[in-house]
Image (cartoon, rainbow, N blue to C red; front, side):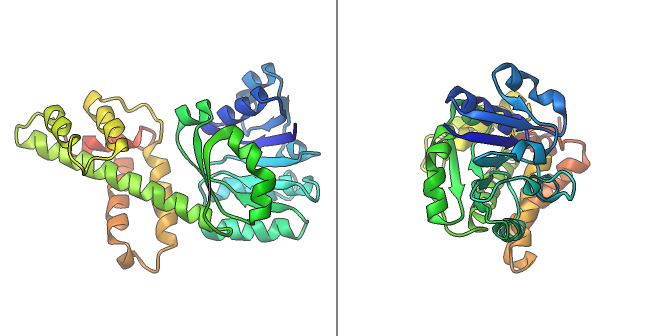
Length: 288
């Protein structure tokens, strides 16, 4: 079994760490808010109080963080960054949803210290993380992936290699863009149906029997129709991902659909929905 450090114990990172403990790995955990580690410590994890301390002696260092800013600080901070203590030959696994440019930069910064970076963002939310059913979208060297594969397969049901560093981030961002576009379309459709006096539950049930319906549409439409907006994937996070995706585009005019849907999520944030689930944007189209 391996010594693994997990940096970031939010909804995803905490569940990943728990699964690593259950699989028998030696796990050291760090979170910006130390109290978040208490449950994992009770399960056998060792708590560190800086990323630098967490990375000491680890074979793998996994980060699951909010954005580029958090990732840069956790890895590269001059006093507490994990890069200060991660040993040569270890593997850094960045599972956060980040911009391709930052992933490439981080890879170069780690390579100087003989540390391999594997970017391994995931598709899936809290239930998939808890069940070890995440889908990995991996960018990086194939040999590094093979050294990490058994670890990733402990946490996920599928591991897809999509190319070099930066490709994983871009595939994850475009996956989330496709998801967000579907959510926005469903929200608009629900509003259109209500405006015309059509029962949206009945109409969407009929639509679900057609070839245009996607599996995720069932989950998202159920959330909208039941007004269940518990934050599985908050508005503010998917809006961040749209922003990173547009940074990778040639121009906003080359990604008009992505640009337009991002504006919908930005409007939702302006109306106080940032911390609610992304499906809460249905409120923009279904004013009672």
